[in-house]
Length: 423
Image (cartoon, rainbow, N blue to C red; front, side, top):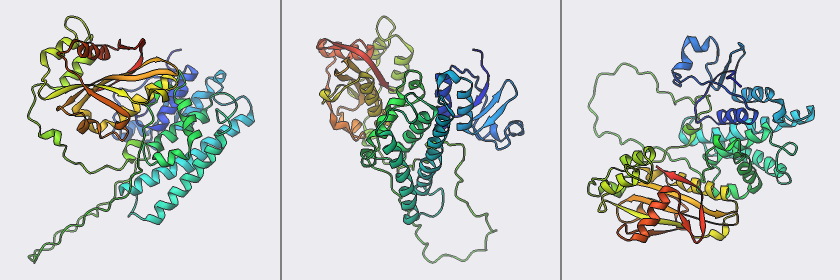
């Protein structure tokens, strides 16, 4: 099928993920505009002449049909592929699909975003009672979704519909904002549904692994400025325009909703300068074959600084808890997400070895310094993994390291099935 038009979106938009997933399921193809610059292009007269609100996602069809609002575009795409079943198979199905979408949008997403804006100081002066009210409304809606999905696989009928894609995408977004581990424990069926949806074969490419938030962020009051002692009189300055809080953009850019944490200097930055450039290594690994002449392993051995960096084996301690291999691979993705704060100190190649209900997680890390803990303890679940320093002068350790990077590692007869890189 040739492209039906141009879709405008940014990768962080929750509803953009829904639209792309619908397109994948329905076999809908579209173009994108590589020249689009968010908050610039969509403010031009050329753009607003087609989309008066200047909002994305936006659809510019080759047949002249134009549309904005993410769910509306997703529903339109689904209508172009009636055999996909995304809009159900009866008028009752269609009504129920709209019901769950509307509840999610108006009660879950709205209140989640208000909580994020309030904590970040982007909405209004912080108020604990208002925060509590938003939280109660969010929780009530999530509980309704949890109760409904507890006795079924999908929200409407026996197959994936647009309702499932919307609910899953927005619950995953909330998981990155304030649905921490205690909150998730009360929603086991909703998160089971989330993982079922985002791991559908045609859908998985459009979703990242679900983040795990150990503790929901809390409001931190800004420090008060110290008053100057005995201020000298001065001429009254010209009145300045009052600085208004940054208005939350309505383009559903969820990354901006997570409150920023204060930056703390990492002691790894005080280590002596190394001749080994980790970013250069990541580029070499990405652009070269792993093994063979001129490969990334050859580059590594030519440039590695064993004083400034070290190499480690990592193993998940509880392989008996692993079930489906795709779920284990998602676990690796989640672990890597939680290591984000150590990205400039770390490279990893970790995989799932074996088969369903008989697998393990293992791999190799290259990290700054000679101790793994200061690098990996930014992940709340780091203690679920065992870290063993490798000696590249030892042939057995060297073979393990190279196999982990080449994704052909085999342990106790269990062969590499899938994996992820942290780079």
